[in-house]
Length: 228
Length: 200
Image 1 (cartoon, chains in turn blue, cyan):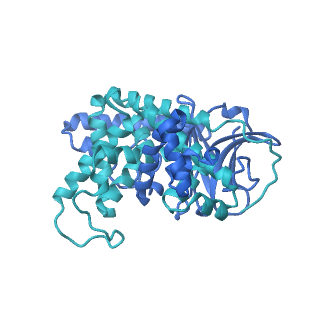
Image 2 (spheres, each protein chain N blue to C red):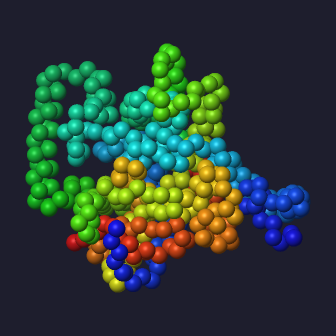
Image 3 (cartoon, rainbow over the protein chains, first blue to last red):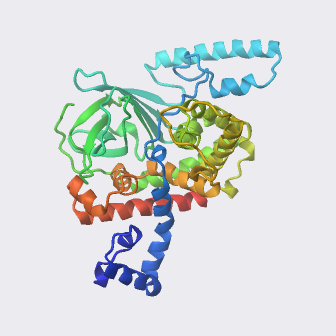
């Protein structure tokens, strides 16, 4: 009996009465068992009390500022609100605006010349492999060795599946960058560190993965973009 | 959905690699914010806005109000950036503490009015999300859920949110019970390690 009692069953309260008695004995007498229970108990307590909003985090309002794509939308952004609360002399404001226009034009020209590259990294578009309207954009930041992904139009996930973001070169070179869920509105995002160089792979790929315990690629790709 | 056969040999990057890097990235994020580097507030927002927004939704139970407060929170994060002291706690906990303060301000200003019907429950004194350090720590665990593999997160969700036993999860997913337990423990240990790293 004692060999079958595991800390996880004790922590989750999934033991018979005999099992619970045995687990309590081991908490008293087995330092390794006790240590595991004590380390994990705060985590299980917090998870038990987590509300739905923590398990399914909603998309927050966007952060907008003049240097970011999509900033044309007239929703006051954080920097706008921040600077809006500070009194700035009109001439200084005008000079700053002119400088922004010049710098913005320069950056815009650079982006156009680079075919989508951004000043602080590369932007790679991902498209559906068929006729569906699914799209995605990956932003590779070589300074911080990280990548972010925003997708839209994908089918929302159920409890039994999720999406996974990959670097791959067929037939067998494959690295998982992370996994994410797609909201009811078809959008999803992921930010992940880059453990390898993007250029060493041919494609960025998004697959839909069943919750089956298999860590491999499901071969059900929904989006793909070339790294070249 | 389109299926394309890709012969695979399995993933080359273990899940543990991004975990360590994510904490390192969070640490450097705090440094970048303190020094007010270009793009730092955007990166901080990207990292913590979902958790903050979720906390505000759960606390205020009014979507319109919850959508306004993140701007206040992250404006304060920016204006007080140099006062963030990594020695006193993680960047996430600092931001969540600010969010809690702004949530309290919002609740104090609130006068009785019709509530968003989507959020039917009334907030009462002693609400779980207003408990201070415990609530902040709980929401940091919630934040760190996004750092563990989706498979483990999904199993933990079934157990702790959907209140399913491990046996029920095994039956519902077709995953052997032993694997469910193993992945459940793995997920809990990852969260523990991430919390330890956050608190260092």
